[in-house]
Image 1 (cartoon, rainbow over the protein chains, first blue to last red):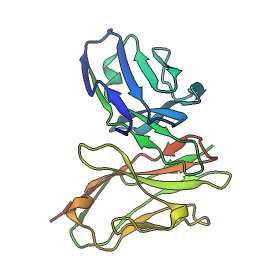
Image 2 (image 1 turned 30 degrees about the horizontal axis):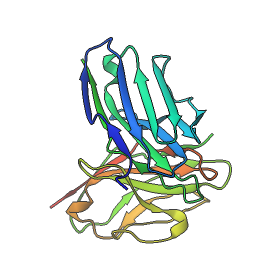
Image 3 (image 1 turned 180 degrees about the horizontal axis):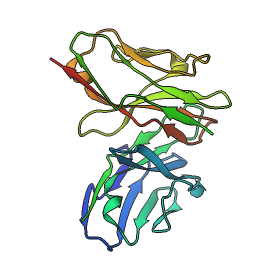
Image 4 (image 1 turned 45 degrees about the vertical axis):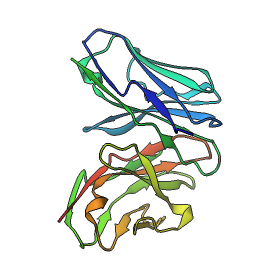
Length: 114
Length: 109
């Protein structure tokens, strides 16, 4: 298994544009998490899904952010419109939802909004 | 509410010196505590978890429920230990992890 896959790895866009980040969790994992990493706030949970259903989206900063998980092998995080303060590294992680609770992280998408 | 605090954003030690990365938490139930590590240009990965009571790469962490702490320790730091370290807390199985702010450890030669 290639682990959690994220695309793109880097994204540079202009303020006001729509940005879509993609994630493919590890096969068989039933929980998926989106995080944002910044120097100021560290690692923040934005939203997580269990069996494709959003469980907790309290970390989503604004209505400009939305996330979907149409099936067990794919999720998207969308920012529309994007702003410079959205610049960060966005991580996706998945786990099997067992008592081990270890989360496996993707390589991240480094987003720069100019 | 669950919360994790890592009081040091930056920590610098010399090679061979002991190192301790502090982590304090607040949680009303029985948490599971973890340390995750992110080496330069690599993805975040699990370093160790308290219920395993194991030593990984020379690191250990003991859960102190009285002090609500889970400090990460290593008696002799190595240059390859330089990385960002995150302490994390989880409640019931499958639920969210709450991460601390992270500590950037630099081990100087």
